Amino acid sequence: MLWSGPLEWLSVGLLIVGVLFFWRGRRGRRSDRLHCAKCLHALAQTSPAEIAPDACCAECGHPLSSASGSSRGATKRTRSSVRTSLPRPLITSIGLFLACAGVGFWLYNGALGGLGRLVLPRYQVKETQTLLGCEVTISKPRWADDLASPIVEIRQRGRVVFASAMTHPTVGSARLQDPLCEEPVSLLWIRSDSGGSLGLSETFTFRVGDATSDDTGYPDFLPYAVLHEGSFAKSDPEQPESDVWIAYELAYKYWLTTGVNSPTIAMRGTPTPSGIVWNSPDESEAPNADALEAIAGRVRALASATEPEMFTSAHCDQALGLVLDAFLELVYAGRARDAWPFLRARYEDGLGTLMTASQRAEVPRSLDALERAILEQMQRSSFIQEILRRNGGSIAPPTNASSAPISAQ
Image (cartoon, rainbow, N blue to C red; front, side):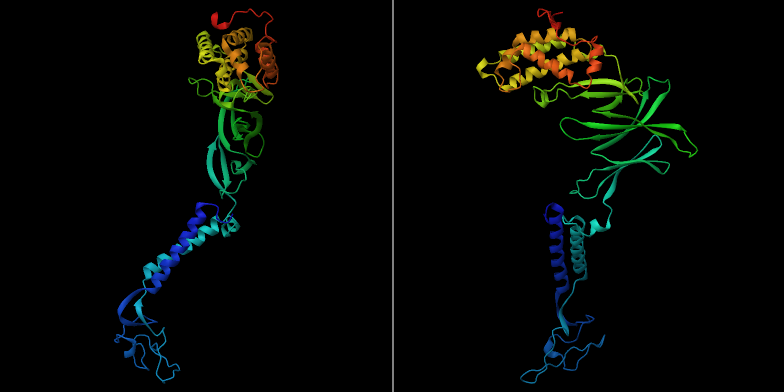
């Protein structure tokens, strides 16, 4: 569309106002005396009838009248010989400026591509940072209707060492303690984010060193690792010089629950060129007995809040999201033996009733079906090998259905 935004309508408004001001300024204000139309000199005559046929302006010599044919042989004065009003230069200049501004806005922001798109570069620099001795520049399209991706460019001592188009790019630096060597590793990272609700992202890391690797005089700038769905963070607030990679589990996003109630699991580790070395699970990463008991109380409260025939999918969604989140945190912390009894106890507390009343077809209708679905989904996780390692090689539910729930231990 030609007029697709406020800037286009602003250009039209400026042009119209500018033309009106220009016309009003040229027309001027009325004067009690006549003036020469050429030099605006004030004449002695006060009306056109007093001007002699051969009169000229005393200032510039411009003829004040010219003969033209008439049936009576009288002399008819031209309209341009004298003026009865004086122009207003200030208003005329303002009108000209506003009209030019309106035309300029249209050329610069026109949806069909005006002069600005032909003359100006397509990209303009939006952000510049200096990280680890490298100059990182993010350039974005100049026009709002240009859907091209931003371009990230890295220069090291004036030489371009990396340039690529990326979606929603962010940049930063990290310092890791590489498990394969004793020396810390300085990384420059660039993250490309899809911007969707799943949180898909891709992070490119480059190792930047202080020593030169060849006779060019440039420090090391080498690809290190490509990481997915995660971000860097400080591993310990008391040791700000050390960072850790936090990866997010997306296998359970929108699975059996809505996005807001989907379980959110994070894995911590240290990236290396050959893969991520995951940290050993910490006790703080799994819910304690008090937290599990609070979840059990919440499930019982949801199941007893109303009559079974009044249950909705929202009741099931909230209860199932709470239980799955705690269950998976236990499994990912290496406590699968405690997670399954917790799940079974919550099913008996009312989760099973809520799931049976759910209107969502994908929600299992029995405990056995729920356990099978969870086990199959965990096996689809990208962290399955690490999960198995943390749980001694098995995450299968115990065959003893009477196992005590963790909240009661």
